[in-house]
Image (tube, rainbow, N blue to C red; front, top):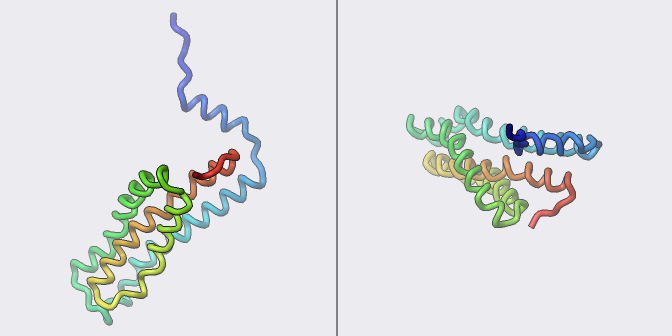
Length: 147
């Protein structure tokens, strides 16, 4: 008879269960929840405001489809890209890139095509900004620092 093997899930779960919950953990939950809400709201709001962009920009049906679906798809692409880069670069730098790219470009659109391109870039930026704070929070909760 062989001894049961402890899985990584079990070991990690026991370690997490041994950490006392504190006000700092609650603060992390609130901050990360706020980040997720704000970035998610930004993504949803862009799709919702297409009605306002129709008159001045005259987007085609294809442009509208890209404005609605494209940024959400590219959040996934941006998230994978950010995860590859955040271990090689500073996670803080990757998050800052994501925030800048996801919020500061929208007012620059003068045509429907520019708006589509900017919204796609915004999707990538949100992919950078949304997942990166979570490993930072875990590092801080356990006392390690970001490279």
